[in-house]
Length: 234
Image (cartoon, rainbow, N blue to C red; front, side):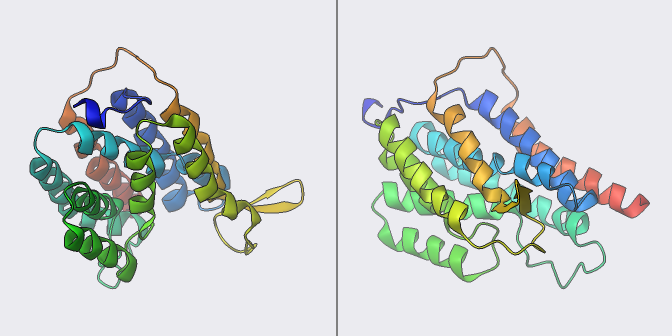
């Protein structure tokens, strides 16, 4: 698969561990400590890392349909726990506030359409992401396009990734926004901390960590169920 080989970090086990740790801190903060903005800042690493790992999966998986099936299955399993974790008092009204696995599923589906020149599939998945209530909207597709198109050029991957997030630095921030962070009298959107994920993606690493593939899928609904249980107890 030389034509699709990535010249960046291929240690996705380490990246996924960083991503789920970041996500856990973010979700505990969002659900239980909404005033702890630093926890939301830590959580900004998760989404771009997940998108990068999915791009690696797209390039190297032996069966993209099984990959999509796993994502879709765990998205469905996770949905009730996601709503209970973040909207325990408004379950049915928030049930179509789709969890991030649905966003990742549709982003990967769009990229599969792009890779295989099934443009109708790419357009349909991107339209669904932008039209309905999916977290991060079409940003996952944009990030995956950057990672895919720059797979042999780390320099351009870094430049385009930075340009994608840089406008956040100059955007107007509502002081009442839970993602607003005050730094030296200036308000920043916590999303800007996603830039800290870039070195992890670009620098090749090799750490002897090997976890079962299903661990990363099962962790998502399991940690949401734990947060939902804490919400109930509190």
